Length: 443
Ligand SMILES: [Zn+2]
Image (cartoon, rainbow, N blue to C red):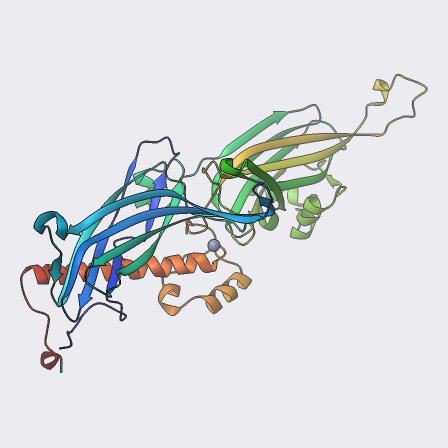
């Protein structure tokens, strides 16, 4: 007799439905926060089966590639291991009846809840090493020639630093700026990195105020470099590898930080730099931008590399990924002639001064994007519309690179929430012992 399944999509007889397919860890591994991963295992049977146990496992694994080889003969090129397991027995028939139980035809449901530690390593999807999590449920059958039933569901574990519930409800990510204030003979320089937690593929603003302290001072170059350092370790094989990748940040746009009144008074004799001038300053060593007409006060909007090139910062000791931002400003100024006391030395016309700032920053997983950034560029809009389906496009946030993983994530969390609500609703109907609707009633 066929049974009518009103709300399960697909033909799977055993499935795991999650309230949320993602767990967001907060702060560092040392923070004692707990997280809930909950859902329901459903089994649809067209005929009764004998079973001994139904269980669910939450498993974390790491996988790393070692092209140089592992082990004595260096002939092992990869290593996979389990780094975390938690399991729950949903129903054990042996325990109660000392023999196998029978699950009748129809729908069976087992709700489950795992309490997860904040110390879990987050999901890592680096090209050379990965950490991934999944749930697997097993229905152990009894009787000759039977095979166990199994279903699997992937779980994403992401991490946010210093997160607060207020930020969560305000739909914005935590932000902390880094300000460096230098007083030098040639100039005073203030560099403000507006956010030190940022997702790959998003816009990244840095404000510069460079006020000259002497005449004929020029900015020769500004360099903004993001470094990703990856350390892979496998203690059991005594293996270790370090890689470093440098990314020069590309400039998207910039705005002047001068007040309107300052602009009108100086505009007559001081032309504001164009985007071309600014790109030249960032890309050549001797852009020679004069400061004689006033301070350089601009907010430069950079775009971070997207998740295809950049990983998120990790906290897992065996796949450690850290990010550093390096800013260097080079200035030139004339040497005061009276300081050149040595008559045998040729007169030195120009001195070069470097302002250097190096700071760690946290790159968040590309799925943790905030949507209060500026509007996307025309190219971004074109890219997005070709990738995205209408359903998501309606509510799409803007101002960053929509990577496929982010779109997939949005779709998945949306569907999962929708399915979960449906299932909960249906389940409460079942609890009231109302039978599912008949074929006739639907026609
Ligand atoms: Zn991505």
